[in-house]
Image 1 (cartoon, rainbow, N blue to C red):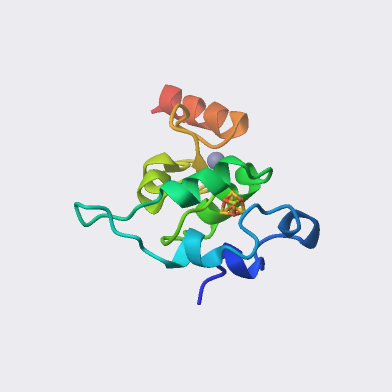
Image 2: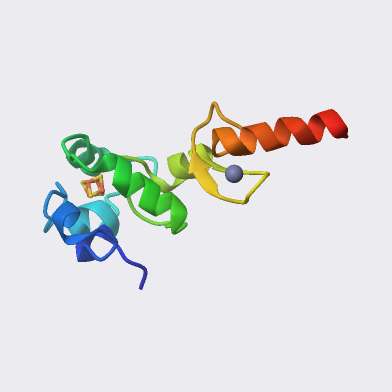
Length: 117
Ligand code: SF4
Ligand SMILES: [Zn+2]
């Protein structure tokens, strides 16, 4: 089984202590309360993430680990897929829709490459 947040394994102890979903793993990552249209009702999980102080760490973890189930960092699997980019320079996965590379260094390398191409 992958490290669902309910196990708190992905996070260092001091972060896990702060997770708003402590003890609520079923809500976050297990129970699929269906919507009327047959989709997944994420509203409760989303509300819990909204009150969590470690959403950034949680989302970064989920993207790095390619977690494809459950709500992580306030985002559903579909939302994480949309947000995830693979850096064309170094292959690092990162979450920023407005950037095309993961870092200023890689952006610089990418521009250099385009100039010499
Ligand atoms: S962001 Fe959401 S899923 Fe992640 S630790 Fe916080 S409450 Fe849990
Ligand atoms: Zn990069």
